[in-house]
Figure 1 (cartoon, rainbow, N blue to C red):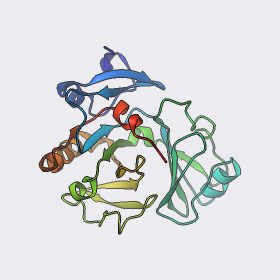
Figure 2 (figure 1 turned 135 degrees about the vertical axis):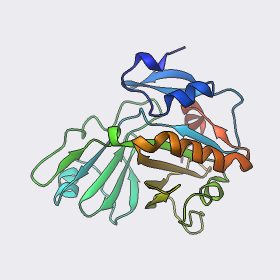
Figure 3 (figure 1 turned 45 degrees about the vertical axis):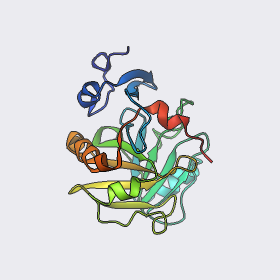
Length: 223
């Protein structure tokens, strides 16, 4: 079994993953939890923190990224897929967040990670933000316990982004369903990652939820 302590790029919550019995494997330049005992769960929480991601900020950030070939959402607080995998989320007129693909394909961010220019500055989101994903038909109900935004599918469309408080810490929620299964990306301050992980597991307990690995996410068919 891959040992996360032997890798410099590991999860902010890797100790909790080890305690939960995670089986790890290498991906990109890090190591992720691939599976857990007793999967599948009706509601799953996955850690994607070792997967590549980056951010850009500045008055010309969106224009520079568009010129580099990235699809840019038309409105703030929306996200679209990147050709080859991953997402680009438009957080403001001057800020974007790029999430890498976790399906095992080549990293789609490699062509953009160093993109900068006048008025466009790279932000180290891989270091500053933990990245989780909650997946399952009860995902919105679970998140309602720790977040004030109405995330029900009837009110929060696929591709919508909410910059809000999650368990009393600032975070970013992105609806990104896995095929027909409801799913949300959750990004928050890396220093608060262990606290948020525990809050999410506590919130999902009544729904029979628990941790799931990267392989479970990949197993869902994506439309």
